[in-house]
Image (cartoon, rainbow, N blue to C red; front, side, top):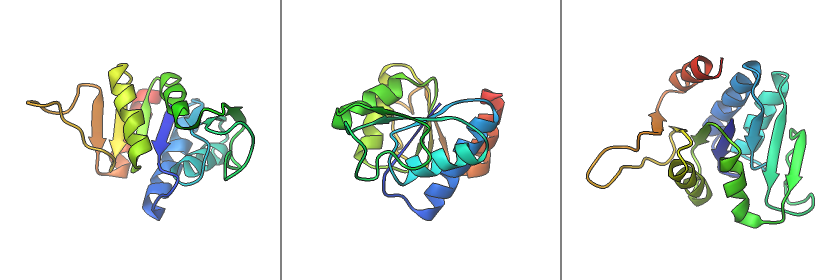
Length: 155
């Protein structure tokens, strides 16, 4: 399961990311992120503290600039910059987006284009022109509802 979100995040976004990472780990899933600070670090930290395994598809070719964060068990150095977002999404069976900026939006769009489900907590809201949200997109305003839904799907 991939956790998507910004390298700059609010304390609330980080707290939710930590819960999401821990929930996935407790359900036996590997937590995949972009390996940086913010939401990515919080999700990885939550997974590690819950006894789980973390993996990160990194934008850089070598360690540096906060990549990988200290909670990444399996770093994959790509040297591909933002293009690594495609590898993150295409390696996931479910993407959970928490907050985030343009990079997160690009990951959401790619996931939806490839029929990978995306669950958003206070992230980008999208609608199909002339219709509602895409079928593979769920949005959550309440973190407890998101975590409960994750337990149902990941268990």
